[in-house]
Image (cartoon, rainbow, N blue to C red; front, side, top):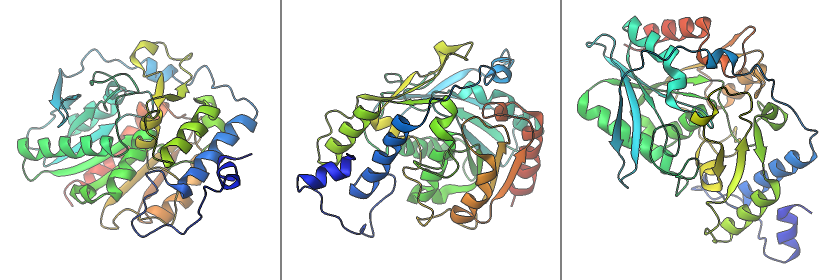
Length: 347
């Protein structure tokens, strides 16, 4: 019996239409149903094995010339780690790049260093709390659903102090792309001039998602159901329980990855539930979406239709013969991104 049907059987469920202020990014009776269905799919779908070569190109990335790390203290004291790729000091645009699920900012080194060298923008790569070199327990450092977006807003506030008047472009890979979407739907998103999406996660039950995320994501379905129900009923003491883990067996440097996520982190690191009729991205923002046709986690050919719903102005590009993590190091992706920046950074 599904979680919503179980609650209905006990007379606790009161169906209603979402109020004007309801958000697909939080958890309510409507979104609970989506999480329940997602958990069911993870228990009924035949197992999928992530290809062992998925991380080969990313693992071969030369990171010998990384910029020195620095940290910014968030308002709650958590240290957010970042690297700054300066490039030309007179660049009038700044792009902030956010890693995907289980990842860290150094995975974006090839793209970040190439953009900075092109002179189109200064680049910052950011480790989200609980990831990479940032503070907090790995994968369990998020305390409420909007906290990652608040961290991004604080980081942008820092950039406004050190580079007043700069155009801010926000980019993200996978779940980081989902976080970019979430941020742009928030009031703070008005500060963003353009967005870069690299094989983005568009929300629970999005039509872009391959079964079981191609074997990358492992969901503890029973625990996800239980914690989701408790949270909707106002019981949040279990929200730090682990509900998702990642298949790191193909990662040569798996010690750098975040192996699991809490329920809070799962809710927060992305746009919530797939909602094509929810608030989209401001039509004045330039959007680039890039994915590989061999993406292990997502259907690249589903992105054009998905972005017609949430950002019809988006330029959507599919690159041949690359996968989900290859998109971070592929020369064609880098060239397309720099060309796009040359057209939007000064607009």
